[in-house]
Image 1 (tube, rainbow over the protein chains, first blue to last red):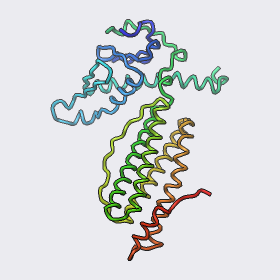
Image 2: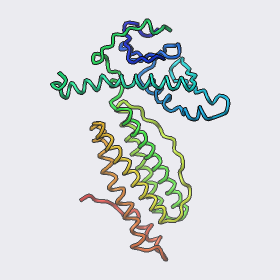
Image 3: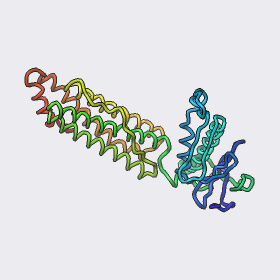
Image 4: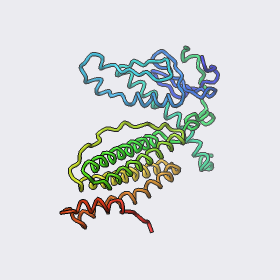
Length: 120
Length: 190
């Protein structure tokens, strides 16, 4: 386990998973589908982009066997995501929420720096 | 691996280390439109190279050299954007270039297409500037100014060459004359 437990902070949670931040190793942990996997910042963003690019309509409409499954194998990770439509929707929700929460501290700090009196 | 129940929940928003900003100063949106522009510049470069080849094949030597130079310039622009994305902590993507024409309708048609291409590039940069302004990314906004100024020259030269088709005319040795004058067209802001 690369990260000490005490260094993990929860960023975002849904009923289907959680994203944590490890400030010691500067990485994120994705707990989804019964497995918890670390990602470097870039790799996490890349995973989010890959999940966003999955064509759900094509998964639903394509009659060929296997079309209802999306497989994502991120680089530098042991994890292989085998996703059905419902999983894609759930993972998207989790990653979108996490990305928003990752950006939020910076936005708040900016506001505090620019107009501290307004937020006092 | 371990389950979520082991993980702590001491979430203090503003005290948390901002890993995203430590990694990159570009927002996802700005990084994406800059990467799209990398692709546009690479595509422009490829189109100009195709035009150069066509002109060479048709015997328009000066125009072939002009378009080859334009292709080099577009690639330089692409690399300028490419390095900027990486320098700011983003991830520049080497683009896949498709739909590059091999044949063109006429000598005049090549220059019309060149002007249309430049106008398209200008519109793209205007759009980037607009998005940078809205996102308050004034560093990228400032960076983009160089490209916007460059587009004045690019459009001017393309338009002036096209006007030669009317001024000189294509009849007789007209196209030979136009080709000879293509490298002489230049832009001066003063």
